[in-house]
Image 1: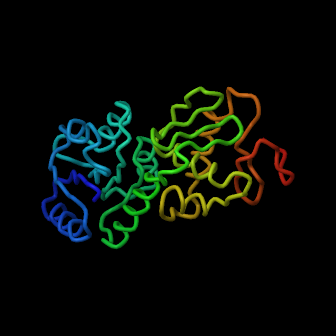
Image 2 (image 1 turned 120 degrees about the vertical axis):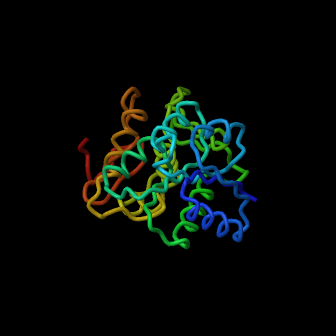
Image 3 (image 1 turned 90 degrees about the horizontal axis):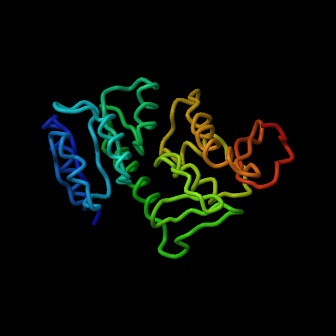
Amino acid sequence: MSAILIVEDDVEIADFLSFGLSAEGYSVQVERYGASLLDRVRGGAFRLVILDRMLPDAEGIDLCRRLRAAGDGTLVLMLTARDALEEKLEGLRAGADDYMTKPFAFEELLARIEVLLRRASPPAKDRVIRYADLTIDLAQKVARREGRELGLTATEYGLLLYLVENAGRVVSRLEILNAVWGYDFDPNTNIVEVYIAYLRKKVDRDFDGRLIQNVRGFGYQLSHETPQKDRSA
């Protein structure tokens, strides 16, 4: 049974979420304030936090940043009425694993939770994935290249893991959006390009040999050889 912490000051929404998620078999606790978030999740007490962006005593973005700065990898699904693209990107850059706007359909919320939990729970076998000089420790959620830890955010880690799992195959922007974020953004968003750029700085910039390749007109590929369709940067 996965434990979920709901940090939401709207009593009606909190009760709705608590009742619905409990009925689905989750162990649910509700917190109206954000000040105690770090203490509540310490030690892996919860698999997932549903975090309202605007709380009486805190801003969800700041709480998420503090959580990641403390090295806590608890999954965070940010729930907010703010639906502008830049605000979504701000939430994801702060370390949120997903960003959902109000009002929302409960069925979609369930689907996103399932995607996040599945992505964070790899099979017990193959706890370390290797590709070329890159390794990903699935238990610790740590990526290294040439033995050096890359210091990835949760979203960067998810993106790299997806590329490694599909190494040698060209994956499209839409495939990446679906697999890493669990839902479709506005088709015109550049979120994939933004995070590919972030990832390249950490995975490729200080090492010999570029692994993350752009296959122009098709998508991206993890490969230690420059793809034939595009030998550009």
